[in-house]
Figure (cartoon, helix red, strand yellow):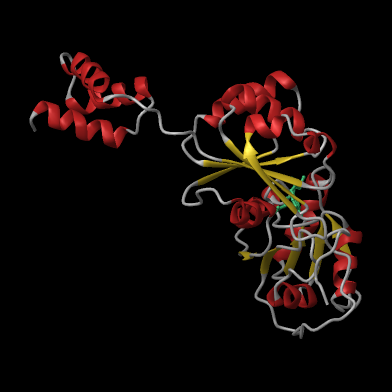
Length: 301
Ligand code: SAM
């Protein structure tokens, strides 16, 4: 049986193979990651916790109810409390009270990892500040799933969430983040992917961009190209489903050694080697470490 689906994250299995344990949970808040597409992408521990927590809370109670039904987890009289961005202030006290009484509370957002472009931050913070333990139940997240299939450097990456929807704010935002020497991960609405690509193409048309669509679902698609190529690709106009964009880091700036020496000598006439290297690196867009090595060699140290 394929465990892929084009249906919502929590719909699915026709067959249940997981053995769910009723376990005695330590008190505390359990932040439970749930599938981003394929409903069987859930850990056994997540199922155990959903089965055993004293109290359940979810961004959308129907979504969690459905996920529990799929995996054969009974409610056994437990109610699922609604907790989302718009009712957080009202809903938190009941959850914090349960924690204060030594209960176990499991929280799920609609899909993926709670708090990652999803509600849960204030709940986790308030719970920790009130002295409750906050337990992570790691699992799917679209950001890391996209990074893992993007074929871009993964040793250093920055998750940026959603870009601003309005043109001017988005362009400024992209210009700032695109200068960062790191692989960048963005969530984007499929309706805005094309516009975001146009903006990226203006800022750095040669930058490699990966559009990862419908990850773990039936119509999963990984599209790779330069920002310019993808901005002109008609498929980007009519994208459907959920999308993560992954951007390569900026290309190293090519500066010839004579120019580097000239700039360094200019600064070193009035500054320490370290300060001169920092200023020269900033001016030329070069890694500080490399420029510092060159400055040291020039100074004869
Ligand atoms: N908490 C979630 C996580 O850990 O990935 C993210 C929630 S955020 C509100 C929803 C966004 O995540 C979507 O708009 C999309 O950008 C991305 N996303 C979620 N599921 C996805 C999937 N299966 N394929 C591609 N992107 C996905």
